[in-house]
Length: 227
Ligand code: DC
Image (spheres, rainbow, N blue to C red):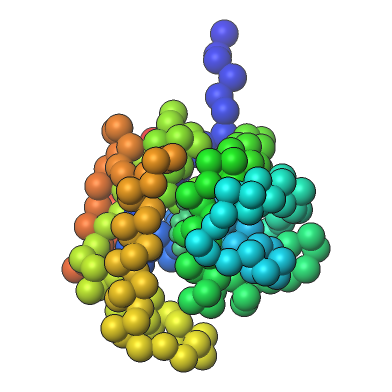
């Protein structure tokens, strides 16, 4: 008798600006799989915290409040992978999620173990029935360590900062390249040195440096790994 196969899960991890989003969206579209942007979930928690005037550095009492908040928030996604909208308690907050302040706050709240616990629970729940292409920092290491495909995308800090800068300018956010590079350095450090689920390649992950590659080349390499 055939074993019941669970839906396919493709984990795409790596630092900011490595090309995770563009790659994951395109792979999801081509395979007809759902796309799950887990960074957006931490960003929603960050934005919700900022609206409640919670700012870094976090006090221990604030951390408890944040965990409670993360458990109560209703985080949802609508639209196809190329134009996905993110909902916070039914409100479309997609544009608010990408400001530099929201990026810092997302990184700060994502270091709180209780917040991670809530998000991981939700991520497993969202992807369990349908599978999907899941983008984040700990998908292959923590959320779905038995994913069918694990990819760790990376690129040089300068290439990553340039991509983020272009993305922000394209969205009309006023910033400078130096500021983007400096924020990225701080965020990389926070994401990879935190005690809970630090950013690192999972066992069995395919490491792909995207510095000299086009999006199409990266997508093709990921698709070639799919069983
Ligand atoms: O991918 P992103 O830039 O939207 O992620 C926002 C922040 O959330 C980033 O600082 C790292 C954190 N994050 C995380 O800790 N774990 C994930 N699975 C996804 C994102």
